[in-house]
Image 1: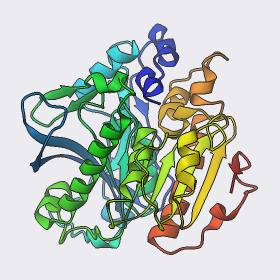
Image 2 (image 1 turned 180 degrees about the vertical axis):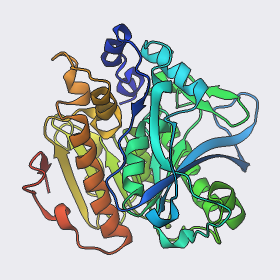
Image 3 (image 1 turned 90 degrees about the vertical axis):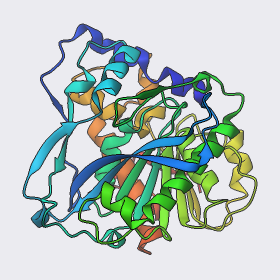
Length: 377
């Protein structure tokens, strides 16, 4: 998966290079009942050296939070950058796009009045998101925001050195190391990411940290009941973390090979694949399946591609692109809005089952509303 992650749709997005950059590409408002507040923050783990840094520095990561806001508490909606400026410029170059392409992409977020806001983070279940190898966390923004709009606090993580660029508030950047191109030791990458996720949970249990990330917060998050999901190696991270982190009550792997699954778990696991990626084709899924001793399910989406589980289909659709047949397998043939709806619907159903003890709903079997989704067990 690392080679595919490194490629990251470069050829597909090269189609944009002949187009004029639009004034703004607006990501649609999510469909949930809540508005969403967005903030970012640097977190430094002073107890852990970065295993990839050559200067012996402590592990520093960046996180984003999408937090639900009651519509009555959201007096203003603002357009905010889909990703920060240096990252946007880097991604334009990395993808071979005209300057300003990613800079033109905007999210619609709530701008609450923090002077009067009082937030109780314990009210909304906490969800951790880990992106694919080589991909910045921003390429899951629309998915994370959509899930947050249904009543979850979603925190996404950038993992330095295996993300192609991580941009910090003071302007410094960390570029991806050779790990992006090296599939020989995915276990180290997963172990590092699991440690990042556990550190984030620790930080979100500290009220002083939470107040910086969420001004007006009266307390910390309830990190004792959280869940994780991720794309590609981020999905492997989510599932592997169940072995080490009791605070995670369930995990979703979106089309990622599994690594370091060495013990059994009783907690729920959902595997989301694509037509040519499932237990019949991926030995890591075959090997891990028997270790999932609690609720487990494997689904795939017909006509999907590896990057169906990212914002890529939506961004391509909003850019008005049509894909040539030889490139369609990477993002699939599903329209961007539909892909976003399907992915977020099934992720949210799993989170409701795990974190809110809701009925499994569409996780019970095939749905007339989503005939694209196929059940394997």
